[in-house]
View 1 (cartoon, rainbow, N blue to C red):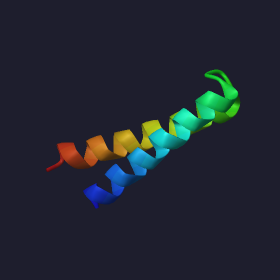
View 2: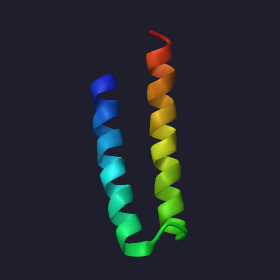
View 3: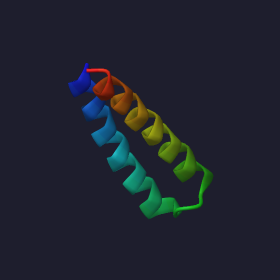
View 4: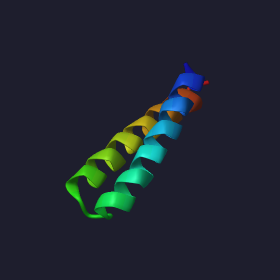
Length: 51
């Protein structure tokens, strides 16, 4: 499960960088993607800290 989350985090980071490049930092799409990345990072931290 942890490996899956890490892959999802890598993909979301790449997506976020692409969005920032095309739309800038303050665009609603950028903010939404950033929040999705935050969610994945929090989930990973929750799983990791419970081990």
